Length: 115
Length: 112
Image (cartoon, rainbow over all chains, first blue to last red; front, side, top):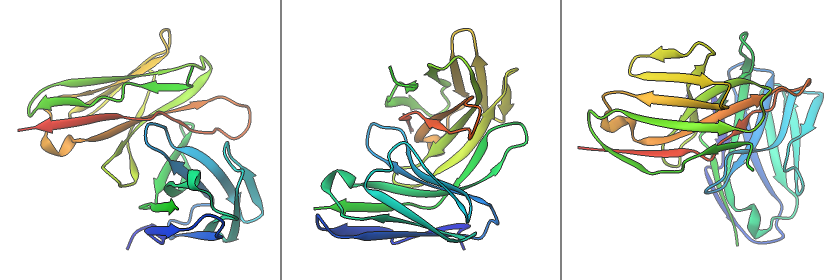
């Protein structure tokens, strides 16, 4: 079984719909993240959470919200989906590298298409 | 100017070739550097960290040039299985959470 599991793997929805992407992990990491990836762009951070009570906005949080239901679960919601939110979404966890920095472990991604 | 820039490629090389990618970063105070590998439509996976003195892992060598603000990845004796996109990751010092900055990736295609 994957250490970081995302559901669904693919989703097609219509403009204006509310969508939830779910992520669960068995790595025991405290830190969890949501990224989106668009062609020709690097991964961009949407939200991150260092523990259940610590949730922070990333660089592109507008139009998104998150919920950290437990240490192992971190869900991403699109309140009212729009076509430019069509992207590949990744959940990730991390365990700090003692040498400095963060090593990320990613889920397999959710391809979201908003029509 | 983007914070992290990579040549998108693709780099098309034959098996057995040596290939190198560079990645430039704009923040001179950047602290940590990594290379991730991403197969088509799959999740990125950590390939290797990049240390100041340079480091090697089998056929892969990573180097950091702080003066010119770039990191490099050298792959020797390329295999078909090396075909992937290689993502450069930089962590600038921010005094708080060390946010990772991803490059858009360099695509490598190794052919027989």
